[in-house]
Image (tube, rainbow, N blue to C red; front, top):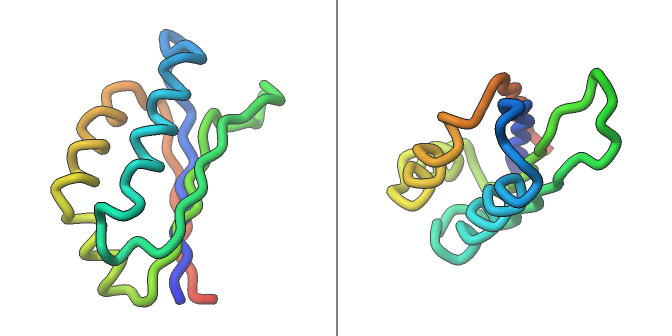
Length: 96
């Protein structure tokens, strides 16, 4: 099993409503991208200096499943929406 974790620091112009819109867009990938087994998206509430604004934790059966997710048109559409709003991004992929 593969876990894919992504954290984003969004531009200061992104408001709370837009953060929730990104969260909903990501969660909507469940059931659309066949290789996506589980997805959890959180919006940070602590607003600490070291905090990121959003986190995505997703689960795949294999590296190939993660790669298929990355190329899936629905995922690419969400990426196209999110990228212009991002200041910083961090990713960790690991085997469970």
